[in-house]
Length: 194
Length: 122
Image (cartoon, rainbow over all chains, first blue to last red; front, top):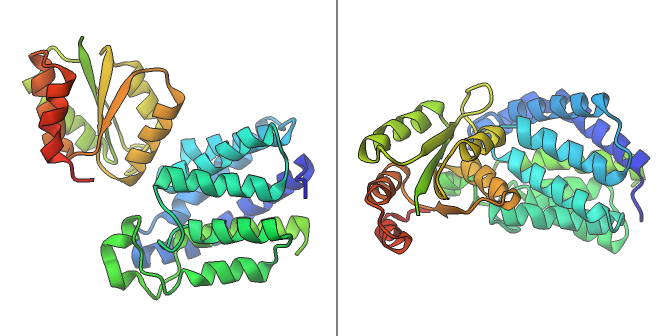
């Protein structure tokens, strides 16, 4: 399916709300296996997105994604800034040629893999992004599918990112980046319907 | 060829400290740094990285970083700039010090890189 500017705007706005509402949860998850600031960092990014979008309404999908990307890159401060930023920036470039939702999310997932030199099963946000891209490619995405992808990170042992220093102790906890990514795609399901 | 050096760290104090340290070994080299977030908290700022590169007067730049998001933001900057940047995955202090010492005596890049090779840790 094609993603319109209107849908994408609702998508990003809902994501911003979820991040602001759940920043404490993200911090808690990150305290267990990271440095405890994922919620604070993402909240700073979310506020920067709202501010940037209120200053100037994007004229097309590519511009919306680019504005969102730059807000994250400039304000997040932690690794999630360049990771989300790269995903959204790559999606923004791709959106100039093609507004197919499944293709765009795959471009985003590939951007995160490149930036983080990571792949699936390393207990990172990729473990949500890649299954979601696959589900969209297969034709449907539901909240249950997003939740299943998120929950799959719980028992993984981290091999990338700060949690990887904890080795086996990283198992038994949800990955915080996967949780914020789950908020992103739950927001998408709200907009496109599950 | 005059090389410049850029230091990127999660901490403004580390970035400044490493810069102070290596300036002593390389008084004629352009050394600039980006440390911490825009609010000087622990983290990294693409904007600070950008200014560190813009303010550096080296013809080519040797870049050193500490951890995850410093590296990612540095790589993001490298994808966006036309500047000639060489990034090294080495121990920050030892690597930057080695490069500064050799750049000061105008050692060729190949020689600098050979000396950095054993310091590779990431």
